[in-house]
Image (cartoon, rainbow, N blue to C red; front, side, top):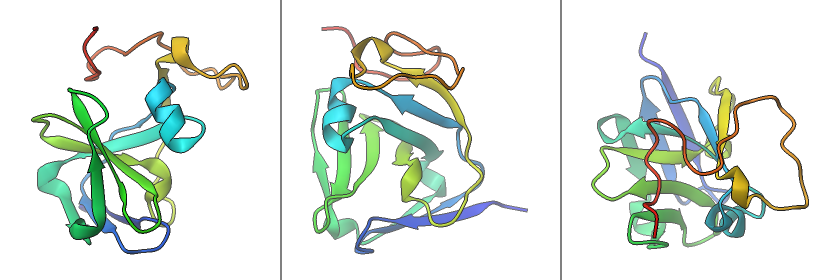
Length: 140
């Protein structure tokens, strides 16, 4: 059976559908993700060939670095997507899915940049910057 999941922004102007399995959730604690969300970015991803987007004209893409862009709803401001340049997949905020897609948190990245107002106590692996096999911004 082919897994199908749907989700949206807060106001519903942007909707998406994924087909097939989703990657485990990765929590990013970098300063950009903290500024965009107020805490940290928890995202899964899916291949572009298994991703459908409705309301694309409502998505505002912000070029936060020379490595990737961040997509959010231009109407309600919901953070939705992160995409590295030339990637064949898109990262999707785990909280944007409708219902319970069965996602599990796998590990934390950019823990060296996390805010001092919270602790990471879930026992999952923590990486100071990126992690093995995960695309992150290159060192300056």
